[in-house]
Image: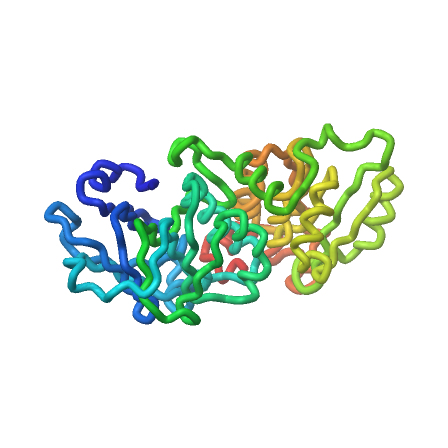
Length: 360
């Protein structure tokens, strides 16, 4: 089980915990009992274990208190004489991975960044594992059922619907997090990377194209334009589509209802050469692009850093070619709201430097 620099402690005591700015993860390679009513994890006591019992927030990016403070339930780890722990009602022969599906579910970028990628890098190296999901959100679990079925051959446990004491030969509580849509190869056993994660996605969704060189040379290249309806809208979208077609592309305009069907949209993205969109969660679908494809991000005023951090840098780690198009002030509808001499237009850095919420 992966616990980074605390591997020695795990081997000696059976329990080790890792804490950093983003995450907290505890691992036991000895038998544990989990009471799903109280979400208490009972671990056999060992003299050399960490001194205090632990309360874990089983969600990546725990520093975002506005998310974890209200939407993520904690899990308590208790060192107990196993004879005094609650009796087993269900016994499993594979370890458990316990995490929360609370937080920012409902936004594909946060779902992949804070849950799907961390879950992959935390548990993929197990030959077999059972997932226990607190704050169980049915819509989220249904949306990614193909991913969960490829991470575990067992039915996911929803503690709220299965109030009992479950016993496991070991457990991981919490998820490792490396960065936005990223895996740091040196920090994970067997050196997994985002290219391995993309292969895992292809296997999960039965996607056929690994590399853009596999695409037919006799057919038009497919370009997907992500169409937003509320913010960061392309005001000349029809003209953009006309130009793209004139350049020889087969154009797919991806509306929100199309992107909502993950199973079908993953296949569409996997067959395209270019994905174009304004900065926003929809660009997360780049995880399904074949290697060598192109991601084009249209960057609004004052959001250069966040655009590059969320999608520009991760695109390169996924084997994609990346291009950004930074709009000019006269291309922004903000100019009609504030006027061309307002700092929002001629010095957006002076606004964004005052804090995320003001800038947004």
